[in-house]
Length: 215
Ligand code: AP5
Ligand code: ZN
Image (cartoon, rainbow, N blue to C red; front, side, top):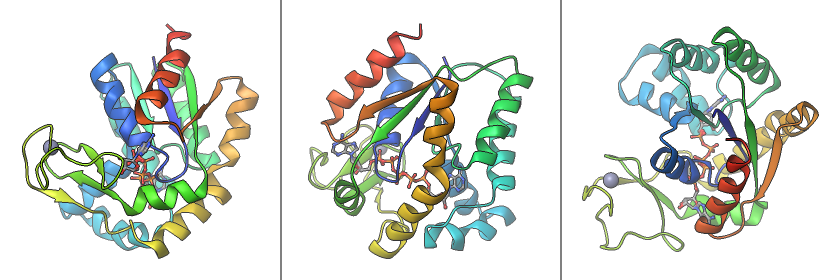
């Protein structure tokens, strides 16, 4: 199964992707994570995109399509596309890449959350720098303060683009450039809206219902 998690910043894409990795053995392809990795390893591309990301703008199609192409060419099946595609050009490119690999997208899960919830989710978010687990000050705190539940690391981080100004830009980018993909996938017949405002477990159950209909 290959699926796309589509939704605004803070909708819970990363949170649900981590569950799907565990429960279904799918491979997560998050362009946000790939770009952050490129930044922290100090590659030339990473340095080029750092400022764009911190402002909350989209990185060029060329760069993110290149990152995804590299991963897909390594082969395998059962991908969760998290935060990709984000523009119509990226959606077209993904379709071509999948065709080349003899594969297709089985389901596009649109995570619906309203803007007010996004602001409180983003402002309370922190992640484990070691294993990537996603937390929230209010809705998903660690059991022991300052220590990751999953791996015990104390390297808990907040993202540079999780501030009010960048979030405003990220939301604008989403509505302008990414939300047209809802119509795009609706026309292709594989769009499945899910209520992203529900609790994490409930959202996971809705996602499971969609995926169980797709083998
Ligand atoms: P990216 O890393 O993709 O960030 P994003 O889309 O803004 O998404 P987030 O990671 O912020 O949110 P999420 O939906 O994963 O939510 P999460 O599960 O963490 O992109 C970052 C930047 O990289 C972009 O701005 C751009 O510059 C660049 N980029 C990346 N991909 C690109 C592309 N394809 N093209 C161009 N540029 C690209 O949850 C959020 C919080 O809410 C957490 O604290 C979590 O614990 C909590 N939470 C989750 N679910 C629930 C729930 N159901 N109830 C209560 N709380 C919840
Ligand atoms: Zn951890």
